[in-house]
Each structure stands twice: as C-alpha cells, then as structure tokens.
Length: 176
Image (cartoon, rainbow, N blue to C red):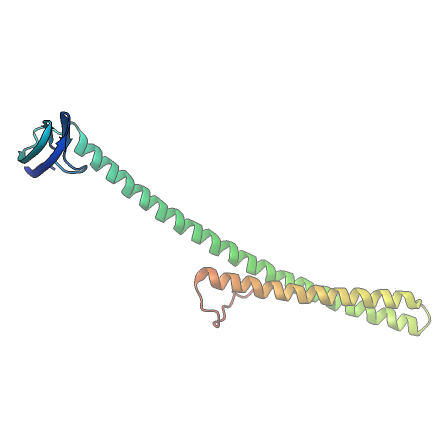
C-alpha cells in the first residue's frame, strides 16, 4: 500500500434525478462520480501515490501481529492442555494400579479370615452365621477386585488414547 496504485472505474446509469456513484467496496483507490439525470455513461482511470496513510498501515500491521501472537498463544495453550490431560491420565492409571493391589490384598485377607472362621465352625467355636457372613464378605471383596481390575484396564485405554498409542499396542507403567 505504499506503492502507486491504479484503478479503472466505469459507470452506466439511467435515472430521473442526479445521483452519486461509487466504486465497488474494497477497490483501492476508490472512486466517486456524480451522475446526471437521464442516461449516463462514464469511465475513469485513477492513479494514486500515497503520501500519508493516517496510521492505517501501522494499525493493520499491529492487528496482524496481534493476531499472530494470539494464534501462537492458542497453540501453547492447546499444548499445555494436552500435557495436562496426559499427566492426569497417567496418574489415574497409577492410582488404579495401586487400587488393584489394595483390592487383591483385601480379597486375600478375607479368604484367610473365611478359612479361619470355617475351621472355628468345624471345631464348634463359631456359629454358622459367622461363616456365611465371612463368605459374603469374601464374595464382595472378589467383586471389588474384579471392578478394580476393570477400572485399571479402562484407565490404561484412556492413557493410550491420550498419547496416541494404537489400541492393539500395550503400554507398561514403570515398576513400583
């Protein structure tokens, strides 16, 4: 926009009163022409050399830079969001793995308690209700273990999706 510019304008009009005609929007340099009544035909060749832009060019440059900076900031924001999501999924997988260990230990402890109570029942030291209650608690612990394992597998799938690992490929968490 600091170099000379050329525009060609042409008008063909017919009317009952005087009218003002302008070039199409966005044409630089723009042209205006007064058209008389009746039929009117005119053309115009215009050459412009900008002497002063009134800060328009600097404003456009500043706007373009601001837009570029905003796009860079958006890219950084998206990268941070991805990093946060992957970190959260990783920590979730580690937590779920530990919860599986807890559920396994609880199930083993409940199995041992059931064995002891059954021995006490066989020797006449505990009622049958204690044995049945212990077996129910063991079944509940086994269900909790199954749920914990399923949640751990789901958290691994979410982690795989977050980091872009193909579904068939396994990921290994670091050892404890």
